[in-house]
Amino acid sequence: MFVKMRMEGLDVDRFSFPPLLKAAARVKGLVEGMQFHGLGAKLGFDLDPFVQTGLVGMYAACGRIGDARLMFDKMSHRDVVTWSIMFDGYCQSGLFDDVLKLFEEMRRSNVEPDEMVLSKILSACARSGNISYGKVIHEFIVDNNVVMDAHLQTALITMYASCGCLDMAKDLFDNMWPKNMVVSTAMISNYSRAGRIEDARLMFDQMVEKDLVSWSAMISGYAESDRPQEALKLFNEMQVLKMKPDQVTMLSVISACAHLGALDKAQWIHLYVDKYGFGGDLRVNNAIIDMYAKCGSLERAREVFDKMQRRNVISWTSMINSFAVHGDASNALAFFRKMKEEDIEPNGVTFVGVLYACSHSGLVEEGRKIFSSMINEHNITPKHEHYGCMVDLFGRANLLREALEVIETMPLAPNVVIWGSLMAACWVHGEIELGEFAAKQLLKLEPDHDGALVVLSNIYAKERRWQDVGELRKSMKRRGIAKERGSSRIEMKNEVQEFLMADRNHKQADRIYEKLDEVVSELKRVGYAPNTHCVLVDVEEDEKQEVVLWHSEKLALCYGLMSEPNGSCIRIVKNLRVCEDCHTFIKLVSKVYGREIVVRDRTRFHHYKDGVCSCKDYW
Image (cartoon, rainbow, N blue to C red):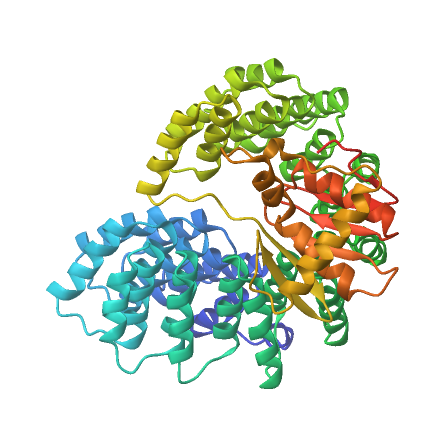
C-alpha cells in the first residue's frame, strides 16, 4: 500500500510511519525499516516520539538491539510504552541482565512501570534464573499496591516455578482465581523439570480445560522423567479426543519411544508422522533417525537418512551416533569423512559420536588422530565429554596410565563421568589400586553416587575385605542409598513387559522360570557354566549361581523364547551394563536356538547371531 501510494505521487505524513515501522518489525524487514528511517529523517519526522518509538521497536524486532538502544537514548520523551518495547527487545535478544539494569534506569527516571513492564521483568528473571531480583520485583508489586491482573500473576508464578521455588509458586497458584491454562501449564513443566512428575500429573488432571500446549507439556514431562510408557499412553488418549498434535508434541513422543526402545511402536509412530504431514520436517526426521537407532534398527535409521531431501549437521551426527552405539565404527568413520566431503562442518557433538565409536571398537590410534584434528583443524575446544571419551578409549584398551594422564593434564577439572570411566575401566581390567583411587575421587565430588559406592564395595569384596564391605553397605543403608536395580524390557504383541532381577511378579513367572531351567540345561550341554565371579557377596557357590541366573535380561529372554515365533528377532532393553555371564549366555542362546537377539544396555547395542556378538566381546 505504501509503494502504491508513493507511485501515485501522494505525500506521507508522520501518522504513516508508526504502522509502517510496525509492519517492518512484524516481518523482520530490516532493509525496509531502515528505508523508512531514512525517509522519516529526510522529512523531519524522526524527532516525533511516536515515530521514534516505532523505530525502537523495529530495530529490536530485527535483532539490532544496539541500534534500538541508540534510538531509545536519543528520545527526549519516553513513556511507559517505549520502556516496555525496550524491555521486550532485551528479552527477545536474551539479554536478561540488561533488562534488570534498564528497570533500575526506569525507576530513576520516575516513570511508573505498569503490569506489562513488570511481567516482562519477571519473565527475564525466570529465564535467567535470577530469583533474588524476582523477589525484589515481587516486593515492589506488594509495596506499591500494583493491581495483579492475570498476566502479572502468571508471570510471578512462572518466575518462582522456573527458579525452582515450586512451593512458593504453588501457594500463589492456589490463591489465583480464576486459574488459567498458561500458568497451569507452566507449573506442569516446572514440576516435571524438578523431578516431581506425580505433582505435575495431579496439576494436569485438575485442569478444567486443556489445550495442546498442556498435553505436550505433560507428555514431555513423562518423556524426560524416564517414564516413556506413560508418555505414549497419554499420546494415545490425545488420539481418542481427536486432538491433533503439533511438531513439539511429536518430538516428545518420538523421544519417549526412543527411550522405551520398542521397535513396533517406533514403526507405528513413523507411519503416524508420515500420515499427518510431519515427514518433511527436518527436526522430526532427525529425531526419527535417533529413535530407530535406539530401538535397535540401524537399517531403518539409514533409510530415513537416505530419503531426506535436506540434511544438516544434526542429521549427520545422529547417523554417526547411531553407528557408534551399535558398535559399527567403520560406518561411523565413513559417514564422518563423507560429511566433511559434503562441506558439512562437524560440531562438538559430532566428535563425541566419532570418539565414542573409536572407544567401543578399540581404535586407539584413530581416536587420537580425531581428537587432535578436532582441536587443530576444526578449532573446537574440547569439553568434558571429549576428554571423557579419551579416558574411555584408553581405559577400554587397558591403557590405564594413559587414561590417568589425560585426566591429570586436561585443563578442566575432571567431573563425575570422567572419574567414573576410569573407575569402570580399572574394575574391568582388575586394576584394584587405581580403581579404588578413582572411586574415592568421584565420591569427593558426589558423596552419594550409588555407582561409585557399589564399585568400591565390589573392590573390597574382590579382595575379600568383608569388614570394609559391611561398613560401606551399612553406611549406604543409613544414608538411604541403594544400588540401582537391574531391569529389562521386552516388547511382545505391542505390549512392553518389564522384568527385575529375580522377578516373580509376572503372571507367567512359573512358566518363565521353567523355561530358564530348560535353557540352562541345553546350554550346559554345549559347555556353559555360570560365571559367578561377578557375584561379590559372601554366600555359598549355589546361591551365587542363582543370583547370576536370575538376572533380568535372562528372564526377559526366556519370556521372548516362549512368546515370539521361531525365527523372529528378540529385542531387549537393559538399564545397566550387561554382565559377562549374561553376555556369554545370550551368545550361546543365539546359537543353540537359532535366534537373532538384540540387547540395548546402558551404553550400547549387542547384536547376537550364531553364537557371535557384534561387539566382538569388546564392550
